[in-house]
Amino acid sequence: MAFLIAIALGWKWPGWAARLFGWIVPVLVAIAAVGAMIGLIYRQGETAGRTRTEARADKARAKTVAVARADERQAQATVDAIGKRVATEDDQTSILVRTKIREMHDALDATPGTVNGDPRSAVPVDAGSVRDHLNALIVDADRSADAADAER
Amino acid sequence: MLPMPSAETTRTERLPTLTGKKSGELMLIDKGEYGEQLDLLAEAIGAVARLNNRQGARNAYDRCVKAIFETGKVPATCPTDPGSGSP
Image 1: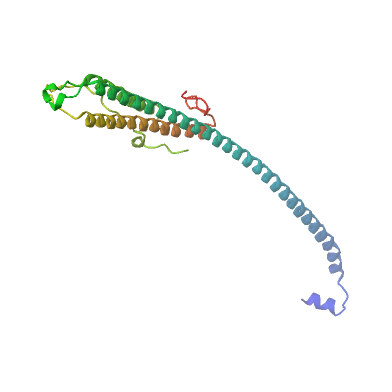
Image 2 (image 1 turned 90 degrees about the horizontal axis):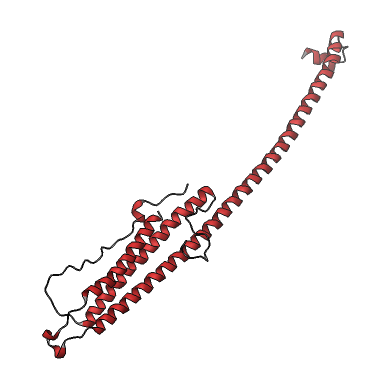
């Protein structure tokens, strides 16, 4: 403080202060210049590094998304195919059921009923053929179960 | 990792085949009514078969979708072309 007051009052600088000043100022300037340089380079490097990292991350993300989309398309195609297949299988089962129902009715129609409502004139139904027709349907249902279990 | 359904939800239904066990006693039944009962029985068995088909489709769906998302490839056991029928 005393030193600053002395300068303000126009006192002459002591020789050692002038020498020290002449030495310290360039050093400080040099340090500041080096610091600014380092700061600038750091900042530039950081910006460039961030840009590059972001670009790389974007590319990696785009690739991941593309892979996921491809997987989704494949999965949809497979699911569509499964749907088509089950529709065909259902149709085949329905056709078999209709066929067996018609055959059983044909057999029943061919079986004579009672004459004038007399129970003694009754003819036994061919239960064996009815059983065979129903068993054919049961075998179809069980085969479907086997196929479904194999898909697990 | 996609979750897999529990075993209980993938179960199928099976029916025993008719054995034709006879009692030796005969009785009368109206032809129309007997026919109707047979129709319903046949349709019920067909319904079991169709539901089993759909359970198979569901099982295949779970298995194939899981494999596709985890490996990126369609397994050989999964259908891919909707045009072709059963593989």
